[in-house]
Image 1: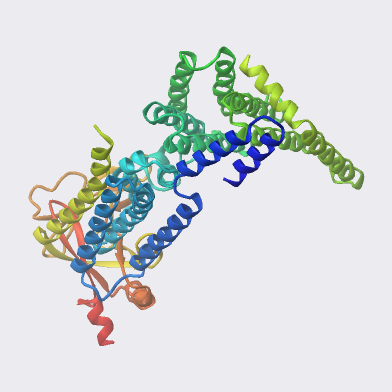
Image 2: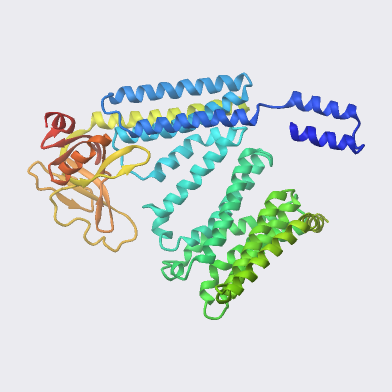
Length: 380
Length: 166
């Protein structure tokens, strides 16, 4: 509210708005202001801490309480909180409903742990997480705030990663060449993002949660390919490991190419990103014929620039800035890779420092111009 | 389907699944045959459920899962538990065997799902020592080849009673 108020005062001072218009807008904003984000944040924090406390108590082993009482008490608590949540939803009290469902998410996880403890079941953590994701998917899907969908996505992708590095069918195939799994993962995440956009809309927290993770997986995949050596490909048991990535990228390319909501330039940028991202995962086979130390960074930079330009075209200015910062960092790393020896000398360090300061100064001076130029180019 | 119905299903579904899981486990425990198996093991910690002892059941069989050492995929396998203690291992279901455990061979190891028993943190060091000293055994409820652990015994006595008597 303070930010809006300051801006309105500034606009009124410059004659863009009349005093009456300013007051109308302020009145409207006050009346339509939803529950305070800070209040919501603290409520979530409080209940999250309680949830963690419940898990800890279970993990401490209640030796002297009969199993039937533990389970009975636990299910009564679940039913009680679920009833409270539904009541609040019916009354239109969004904050209370969201806090209750956040608490329930932790309670369900605690219940899985409790059943596992009482019946001494074996199994891996990823199996418990997958079960949790399965049973809470609908709660995350119907949530109107960000916390529960983001938490669910963290659990979902966390369980996939745990599967990759523990005894599971994923480990059996990708255990020694897990970088190929990182080839497929961003495409999977983007496809789920598109699905959420179709089902819930672009402003939904579900879409934002998957979108967030899609960008993270892209970064991780590019980073993994830059640092992974040939060891990941030397022990490749079958080239069939590429297939999931190929299938998903093909599906994504078809969706992009046939989309009615994207301009030609936006489609081009996304297609460059989709195809470009696949390239580093095949370079090992041409290692002896190609200068990989140049090609890998070139592909990374191309992918990041494509995504940056696309981001600015859909109004994601912050992401655009972050991506260009990463591009800058990657250029810097390339400089150190190319002139590594020099950088170790005093002269080299001084020069490097001056270049960094110079680039940061120029970027800060011309940032707005670059953003506007990029927007103008993409939105033509 | 309207939003209210979706929310209601979303809230009820996990509770029903978890209750169903609990009832399923309980029925298996009550309906199964109680068997005691010797174990040997050590004690790590599970982030979700607390301290537990990891162990392996000592079936008294010398060669299990031989021929599976280099296989990439799991292979179903069975251990027949005989009253005279002459248990035997087989890759096909033992038709004439009254009590058998179904597991699978992963490499050269027989995986039977009996690998942990949850214990209070403060009792962990004592129990760990006892199990490593080969004084431990587990009671399982066995039904159609699927075992569920019901108790851990130290020298034939439930572990809580054993520790209290020490």
